[in-house]
Image 1 (spheres, rainbow, N blue to C red):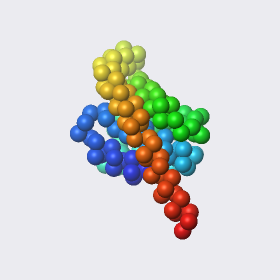
Image 2: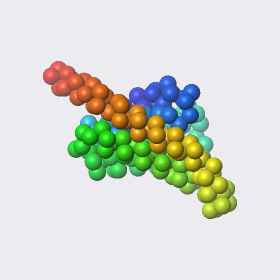
Image 3: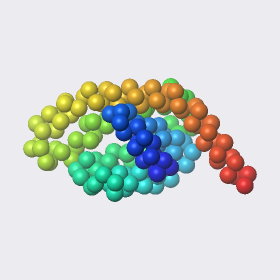
Image 4: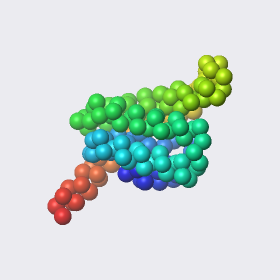
Length: 155
């Protein structure tokens, strides 16, 4: 699942802040519970290995794993609307969380706020794309994963 998250993000890389990471992590939590942390670890490691271990990567080390306990709160739900709201909210939270390591580098609060405020349009796109992508794709991907898992169990 971690490699899949990475591959899907790479496939959508030409469209800024449009990605399915949150949806795929949510689905991983629904089907595999806390094991989703391992998939997130693989995803984050692949990001660093391919794109370098910069300050942005430090943010990924804590941002993406934070989605796992957030999703665990609603793990039993199969509501596409609920998950779309969660994913959309995550898109809004991503920017403020992303710039936490920059707080030290950019001279404290002033640098942090400057980075975050400049990124708000991207956060809004991230929110909207997460919401719409999850609303549209949650049910079909959930059904697909259920079929794959059931086939594997049957042997």
